Image 1 (cartoon, rainbow, N blue to C red):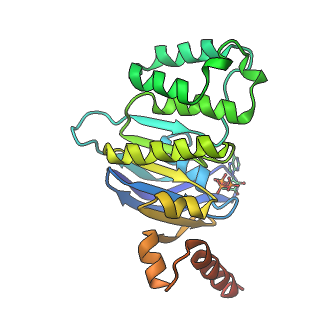
Image 2 (image 1 turned 180 degrees about the vertical axis):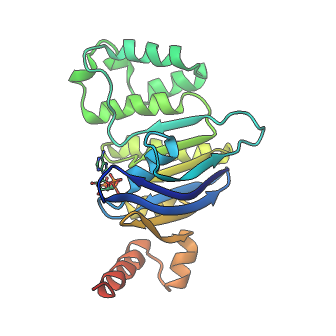
Length: 235
Ligand SMILES: Nc1ncnc2c1ncn2[C@@H]1O[C@H](COP(=O)(O)OP(=O)(O)OP(=O)(O)O)[C@@H](O)[C@H]1O
């Protein structure tokens, strides 16, 4: 379980990236964070991960067995040292954190990373670097998976694989939090979504409930209607 209380993040000056955000969620769920560019999705994710220091609020985790929680993270853009080989990077990851060998080898093969082992990271495409992130993130079981725009630079085949991994992790009892701009992806995967606007949560609902309340079947359309109404009421 994760509980986020009054979380506020600023990078300095007067601007606030995340404003007094509150939510809590149980394990075994997929939660999606959506919102326009600059609405604070990545900042909220970085706050959850402890990568940025909030100016107010707190985040607490409780794992079922009382053990320290483990987190897998896939950033929006994979940033690895450019002058080492793929094989060296993967060996480094394996030294940092033990992997489940069967899962690791399955992923390595599905992601077709074997063909890239002798290449320097700097020579890889963005999508191939994301595949290494997938391998790193999903080669061992975690309590929480945090994925920032998972499918942004992936081809349809690998996007499909990643979405299946998220569903598999939920079924195994982990909590999955991902941000996206793709509402179809949200409707397909999420048990619950948070719509951020200017750092605050504007909607916190399940896709089904939101559709029912708005008498729609298509989330894209329902959210666009909501958004247009929201802007109409702004000065
Ligand atoms: N490192 C940083 N330094 C200063 N300001 C930042 C930094 N990172 C983000 N911001 C600001 O914080 C606000 C929220 O940005 P954030 O990247 O969290 O939004 P986002 O919803 O993830 O955007 P996008 O959809 O474009 O990825 C924006 O105003 C952004 O300019």
